[in-house]
Length: 309
Image 1 (cartoon, rainbow, N blue to C red):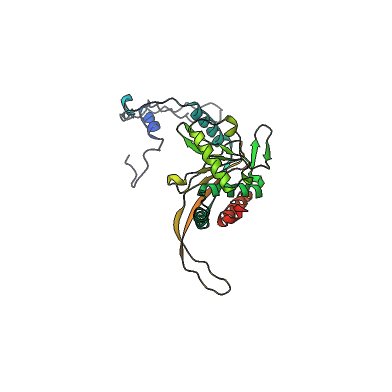
Image 2: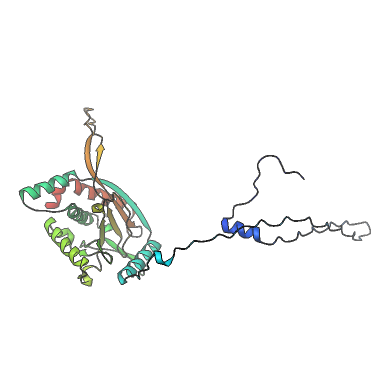
C-alpha cells in the first residue's frame, strides 16, 4: 500500500534513550484476532476463520548507544567537604525542601543615606557603611512589624515572635558562609553596629567566634552589593522566618513627579537605588505582612535621620 500524501509523524518522541531502546527491542509477532462465530438455527458453532500469515517485518535500525565522555582524573581535583560546608549543605537543603519560601522585592533610593554619610564623615569624623544603615533600618522595621521577627517550630507547629531583634549578618569566610549575630540590634546606634559588625566579621574569618555568637538569631541579612551583585534571592536559615538579600546601588534615571494640583512636572533625575528582596517562610509571614515590612524598611532608608533618634 502506498503511504498517505502529506507529512505524517513516523515516531512518538520518547527521549533519546527511550527511542533507542524501542528500536533495538525485538518486535513481537502479531496476534491474530479471534474469528467471529455465527449462531445457526441449530445452535451449532461455525468453524473459526483461518489465521492470516504474518507479514514480514523490517529489521530494526541499528542505533549506536550514546557515549558519555568523562573528564580525565588529571584535569580535576576532589576536595573533601569541611565540617562547616557539610552543615551548610544539610541545613540549606533541608530549608529549600521543607520551608515554603516566597519572595517580595522593593527598590530603595540611597541618595539620602549617601548624603548623610558624607556629613557624618566631614563634620563628625564618623565612618559608617551603607550596610550599617541597612542593618539599623531592618532592626527598626522588625521592631515595628514584629511578625517578621519570628521563628517556626516544625515539631510543635507553632510560630514564635521575639521582642529583641537579634540580626544575623552573613559573612563569607574561607571555609564557608557564617552568620554572626548582632544582639539587640534595635537598641544600638549606627556607630555601635558598625564596630560590632567589624569585630564579628574579623573574628569569623579567623575562626575565633564562640558558638553562641553565630548560633541563633531572629533575622538574617545577606549583602552582596560589594561584589557587584544587583539583586539575588537568599535561602532562609531555619528556624528563622525570613532573610533579606541586598544588592548593590545602581544609578538610574527616574522620571520626575507630577504635582496633581498644579500639573507641574519635575525634571527627570539620576538616582542611586538598591534592590532588596525578602525571602519569607509562609508559615510565619504572609504576603501582606511582608509587604508592610518592606514598606517600613524603605521609609527608614528614605529618612535615615530617623535612625539616629
